[in-house]
Image (cartoon, rainbow, N blue to C red; front, side):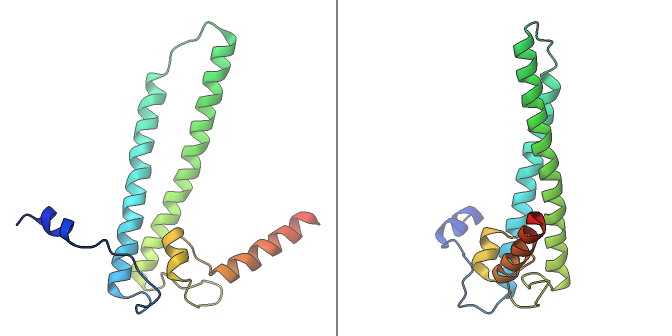
Length: 142
């Protein structure tokens, strides 16, 4: 039997709150999720770079040129955000290696499997994140 057939027969693993928190299986799940996410971002960045390099045409129409520049600017801002996201993914992978992944950096409590599944780069528990956002809102309103 081929490896792909064996994997196809297995149910897809999803971590649950019923398991031991940050068990070896959960850590491997999140590590693979982070690696896949990073590879997707890098692939998309490569495609964007190719697109930007091929789109060097000079538009005679001023409106077309402005539209092209706006699109280019938007793509570059998106790539910059994704560059920062890659940095956060790398930090999360380091936390997996050092054993601190999945624990709130503010309280030391488990972040929660559902939150990590939704946001695998999370460093704060939901409660700590809400407190942080409330403090930010207060400072912005001052």
